[in-house]
Image (cartoon, rainbow, N blue to C red; front, side, top):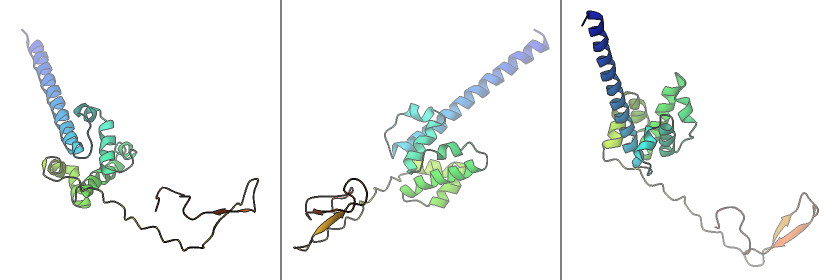
Length: 168
């Protein structure tokens, strides 16, 4: 075997080792995101192995727009998007937005969030205000401003109609 063939074989071996190391590193990265994501939602490990979708899932955990994942691919803005996504995840777990968001650029705080004992803080129910009491004898009128009956008013009984999402 000549020197050129030996160098080729050594080069291929180094290339294979580097490829395997890259795949193992990527799978470890996916496992960290999956471990962190499982604290918020039930997605399988393979979902976190899909390159862009893994960050869409992280955006869901952070309760920010999934478009933040697209910002990760813009050179300088990507750092800000990473801080925003991981900072919001940290905030949802009762941790410092800036401490964990900025620290996430070196990956250590992500490991702390993923493998530490921090759990998401349950979202508090919005304060429900009791419905104001309706004085007896009060009339409610609906004024029509457009359409066939524009200018007319329709009387609405106080306890019969709810407009909006909150019945109170």
